[in-house]
Length: 407
Image (cartoon, rainbow, N blue to C red; front, side, top):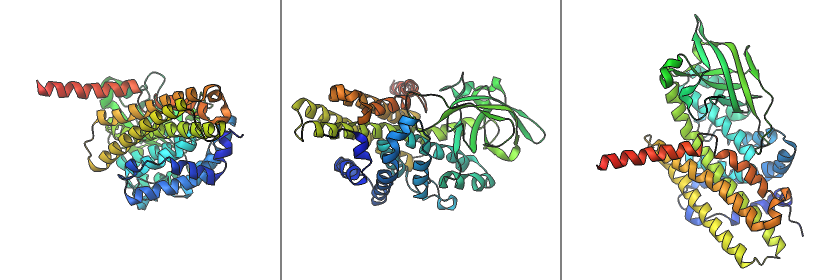
């Protein structure tokens, strides 16, 4: 009897068969033909290039370079970017579908993958043509790694409290400060850095810049030792009077808050898709282990619990697709709608992993099954891209405003 998840995930044919079995027609009917093609392509690359490496990356804390390169070479890092940058001009739904597939095999790989998009997107929306052509193609083809520098030791979800400061000079700005919990920060070739030009202005002082990772004055801390996401790196960044040319401004001086808000729409789709993917991974690994344990005949208690998980995963997937579709069609999608998706789907990833471990009993604690990895990886998705407490605050504010409008 072989209960090891790696044994399943190292066999592309078996991996594909299991995950095709878990597709839900009620969700698929809302996908376009192109979006289903993207899912099929991503799943195939994942089965052959990502899933077989996942357990080893987690065990040895090895950066997921080969896995990300395989995704980039398949053209998947540029899904929402136009062809002139090396992208494919696909929908946010296609991106969400791809993110779910990658996460279901290796959440750490999906974290590096999504950070490439998170770094490229602000340049596309707020950068000059020169900056776009200089930096976006490399982020999409995998020849450069990117980081999004927002979080600071004293300013996480409250971006308006940033203390990294940009002092105006004759040629541009001098940037000084510190960032922390920066994904791929230890190796980033391109850094999107948010700083303030005047702390007294709050969010009106926030300004966005593109930094070249090799510039003088940029320092990097050693990667943190984390609970999960071991195949990705997370580090501190230090800026000591970094000279930033005026041409490296994103948007306008003091316009960084707008850049942040446009960016978090995309990043929260990413996190939500991770939540659904992790829930699906926990479900798939549990189903495979129980099938081996019980020779294909599952106990009623396990069958009932899995039925509940299947329904919850479908609900999360439908919410993910619906909000991503709304982003594709309505530029005025609200923070509360985005927050509801992010909070619900990432909570799903964590709670589904807990339930999967419970269903497996003592087997749920075995690292060889991969369910405990889902649990460790899922926790941080509730924290980054705006904590789920912040998401509940945004949802609550929308509810309060709606009630006032009725009064």
